[in-house]
Length: 163
Image 1 (cartoon, rainbow, N blue to C red):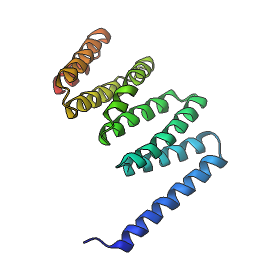
Image 2 (image 1 turned 135 degrees about the horizontal axis):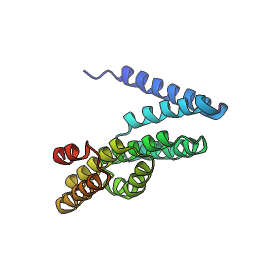
Image 3 (image 1 turned 180 degrees about the vertical axis):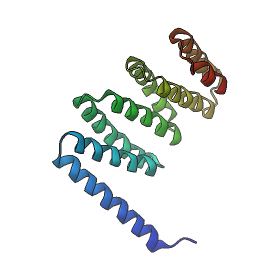
C-alpha cells in the first residue's frame, strides 16, 4: 500500500541529508570533506533512476573526483570512476558508460586495481548486450582476456570464464 505522507517524509529526509552533507562539503577540508562527499555520492547513486537524477549524480561525481585528485587519493578516484560506469549502465546510459570506460580502465591499470578493471569490463559487456550489440560485447570480452594474459593475473581467467 502506498502512503503519500510516507513518500513525502522519505523525500524530506533525503533533502535534509543532502543539504547537511553539502554544508559539510562546503565547510570542511581533508578527510572530513572526503567522507561527506562519499556519503552524498552513495546517497545519489542509490537514488538515481532517471535522466534528471543521473545528471545530478554525475555533476556531484565530477566534483568528488576533482577533490579526490586534489587530495592525492587515487584509490578513491578509481572507486568513483567505477561507480560512474555502474550507474550509467543501471540507468541505461550505455553510451556514457562506454565513453568513460577507456580512461577508467587506463587509470585502474595504472594504480594496479585489477578487481575493479574486471567490474568495468563486466559493465561494458552488459551495456553492449543490453543495447543488442553482441559482436561488440564479444570484442570487449576478448580485450579483457588479452589483458589477463599480459598481466598474468590469477583471477583473470576466472572472470573471463564467468563473463
